[in-house]
Image (cartoon, rainbow, N blue to C red):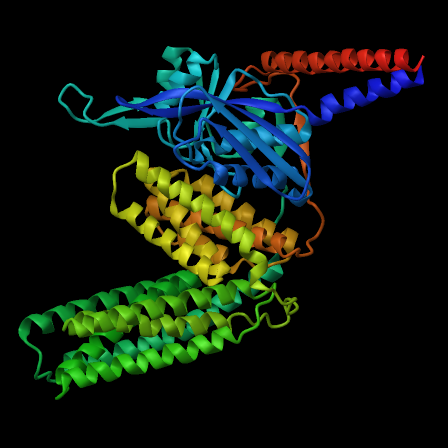
Length: 617
């Protein structure tokens, strides 16, 4: 009898603990007539392991889905407060036709992984499309209408799409041959499918599992916020003073002195540029008075570059040996950049200063690229273009040292342990893979434009840094690439929501990790200084991405943080007023599946125990 009971319990445990979660995901398939919708089945299994993510696709997708799978797994473990390094995750993807792979299944993969980690059932009549961001946000995808139709054919009653993609524009389908805008929600009603926009994995998990996940809640850290304001104010004071002195000098030189070598057109252009400097300097001072110190510094920095260009142009024109003057100017800047590069290289990387060293390295490498471009223009006999690049490169190099100087925490935080940058190689690879798939996906489903070209350039830079062992820089260039690419696909105009997400990420870094997320706070402040919706959204997204980068890096280097945070799971047993989905029906299906698994386990356990007991007798 004891043997029967033992094997019964073992069988039940195996069914519950190691049963796969299967989710159906809408996708697109490329045919001779264009893209058409289809569905794929993905089995997800989690077992004890060492942090690997495996994916098996049949047939092979046109794009690598490995990156989406990695990000999906990472977010799932973060949400569930589990250490991914203790598990292996398997994704088995099956489709009847070849599909276009990429990031669009990322959100669904994350949902299925969370369900598998918690032994939850998946509601079969819910389907979803949307990429997954490292912070748990759901990002834009293409082929919404094709996927919606495929979901309907597959029996979906609910179709989740990324927030901001309710309206899809189709080119050349109106009666006049112009563009037509389709309301996906209304189109879904005609098909009998309820279309719901979701912003994050926290929204999506509810529809699939009837569980509500409540994020960790952190509040502002006054000490760290004050440290940020002091650092940014001190930097703004220095840069504004330099800029104002430079403006007064250049203004006096251009307007009060007789510039013999200037022709009328050039003098007019330089004075117009100086007027723009005056306006921007006033704006920088206004931002400073409003407490936007980072934004004020950025605006003043742009003024300084323009003033350097004007002043150097005057020097060049007044020079008796113009080519020799310009050559010496370039040599002096290049030598100065090399000296600054050595200073930055000798700075020890620690847990508390990696953001400042990252900012310094990024700027010094950019200044190197700019001076290289200046030399090319010099040898191509384009002196004024050479001056433009050299002026920018000179001050970019100076800004690298400014950021390095901000790394002094002035007693706010300990110096921190030394970091071997090689520790960040796996994380850099994940960020690089994610950016590569997103950029490639954009280039396939949308026409080539300047923004996607910028994303591709950033991606190439990320690969270059990775190969050089500059893993921190590779991560930031990867962030740039996927922010550009996703912005090109679509951008979330709900700036209030993005602002809230940025705040939550920043507060989490400060509250959970006791770290000052200076870049994320800078981008957050910069976003607040804009009235333009696009730029507000763009820089809030940067703020979210950089705060998440801090979290990922601190976890990667095993930074000690304060506890696991609060993680609430609430089961919805009945619908409430205003609830979008029919929770009762979904809950019924989930309960039926759970009961079915239980009886299968009981049956297998009894059978196994019976035969073993019979053999022993």
